[in-house]
Image (tube, rainbow, N blue to C red; front, side, top):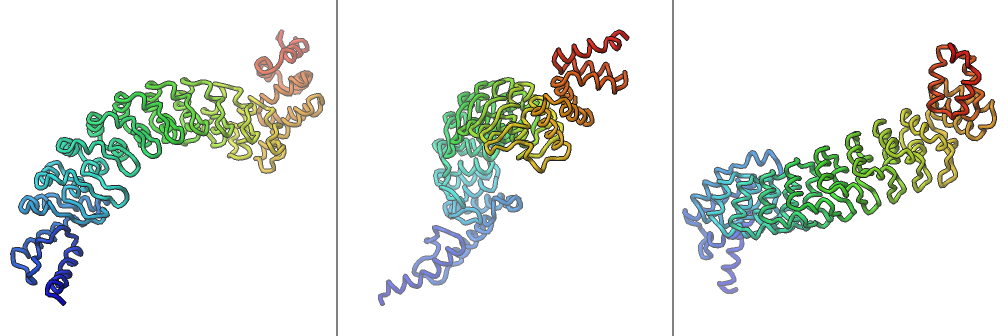
Amino acid sequence: MSSHKRQREKRSPSSDDDNENGLVGRADISPPNKRVKSEGEKKVIQILEHLQNLFNLDPLKDSDVEKFNAKAVMKVITQNPHAATLKYKTKYLEEPCYPLHLVICFKSSVNVVDALFRAYPNAIKEKCTLSIGRPVTPLGLACSSGASVEVLSLLLTHHPPSVKEMNEQNQTLLHVGCKFHLSFESLSLLLETYPNAAIQKDEDGHTPLHIACMNDFKLNTLSSLLQTCPEAAIVKDNRGNTPLHIACIYQVSLEVLSLLLETCPEAAKEQSNRGSLPLHHACNIRPLTTETISLLLQKYKAGAVHKNSSGLTPLHIACRHNAPLEVVSLLIKTCPVAAQLKENQGYTPLQLMCWEGEVNYPIFLLLLDVYPAAVLGRDVHGNTLLDHDYLPFVVGNLVYCVGNMIENHTDKAEVKESMEYFIRVDWWKGVSMALNYQPCLVLEIIDSSASSVFPYLLSMVGRSCKMLTLWSIISNKQDFLSS
């Protein structure tokens, strides 16, 4: 074996030792012809190993970020600038990185970042690879680490091209900043440096405004994005959702919704790929407020009867998911005909709530008031609510009585039986229905009731019944009226 080959075999163990210590680029530390290191070399190795130990933390853990000794790192680099040209490992990064990248990961101050940059300026152009994703520059790390605006300004000043950097999801740094809640000042700096980023889409079709709405950013941040690029308010992602759709899905504040609608009122009419309006999404989220629904209806009243690709109106969705009574009432008041519309399976909102949702009794009565015939509506399988075996007792009885009365409205005895049940459960809309079918029954009610009930009964009939029913009372009970 040649002497040259033997020398190579002897050098390999020391090289392996360096790699195990996490130090990269240290070929000059161990001269090939020396088995025993000098005191100077040992001191350098100790310094570098100390630096490696300082970096060997996880910047994703708050406890490790607190442990990170940035001052100690800066002191070592200041005394040994050459150490800034080497790469070090951490528990977070997939590959070894320069100290400049690492101090940014640990959210160090601008003074520390500046010191590391001055020790090795070329590091600002270099990229390191995170545990998942493509390599990023120090500026990319700063945006994902929530760095201060001072750190971002320093990095942008010394390497402006990095502002156009894209990550593995095709996101700009503005996307990343919105995702990781950069401050208003930091996002404004990114916008000012690269305004076109405001309209760019990532792999999911999201603009930075979509991302900001997912994270319920403060009003000033969203306002800044919209001022820079107002057309972003109407841009759709891959699912056809505008930022307003996203804002409704993620339950942003009423102020943010108002800002989006003021910037682009037409966004309330935009449909997703499945035909859903922002109003559909809003009705699907809990907790649901009347103010949110009212705001969306003000911009697009017809949205109350708009069907998505499943045939669902916002009222269907609100009833299926047990929305507050005030919300259901608002949707019905805006467009009463919504209570009669059927989705693709043949369900009205009342039927859908009974078959697929949790029966809310006040909402059930409200829907029954508006469209009693829903109890006899048939779905695509030919079933009505009369075929439902698991309805709550009172609900089931009401369904039976209403259905029976509608089907047998010419039979006085059947109508009377149903009416008597409606009186027992205080469903006066049902009473007025019965009297409209059989006006003569009103006289029996009056005869069997105390005189004190008559004014209330007359008022109810006047508001809810046909003129023929009202006339029946007036013509037959003039003694009550005269007194």
